[in-house]
Length: 264
Image 1 (cartoon, rainbow, N blue to C red):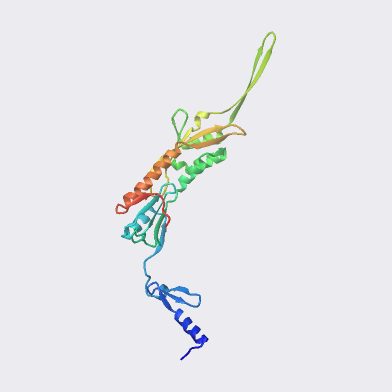
Image 2: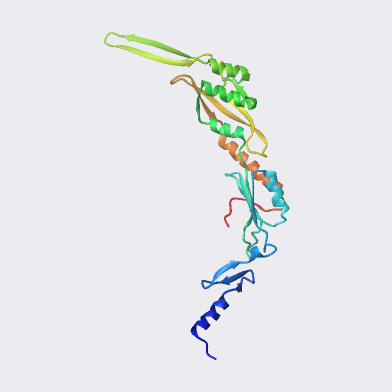
């Protein structure tokens, strides 16, 4: 029995439609050989997958340790972040890396305020507001190393004023003469103002409390204002990053913790 061209095309199309692939997990359908994943039609997923994201150090450690997965943890000290691909597998049997846990440790509001103040110049009103807002964290020291009370510091910033002194120096000789004018602007009662402010704070959630110093300088151009500069901030950041890495490593003793990032 011979078959017509139309019959042969119908048989070919019927054969292509519904052909199993990927060990029965998918079907090839249609003339364009479209692959259809059958997982959503099954009672369960083929494997567990998902992305856990958190800002909590303890929550990250709890989740990763609870998976009982032999997966490395990658610690990014610069970003204060950590990540683990819990189904990464190994070189002989690599996983899909679609089950992950990610930690992004947030700065505390007080540390953000410290960083915002670093390198800034504040006028009297702004300086008073800074001390009033964060005064419960601050300690003050004058140029002699003596401690200053917060209330007196606020009063000193409010009452600060400038002395504008002009002096004329005259030097007359037989064949020449020289007249010099010197202008000096100084801050009145400067000893009442702090030269160093100490911030006692927690930099990131879950880390220990530390004290960060900030230099205060008076500026006289255009009216009284104050320049703020963090002292040894780079060294402090290194210590903070080291503490973060240690907390993750100590919290996950069964995991291999590596410094760096990994892109699957």
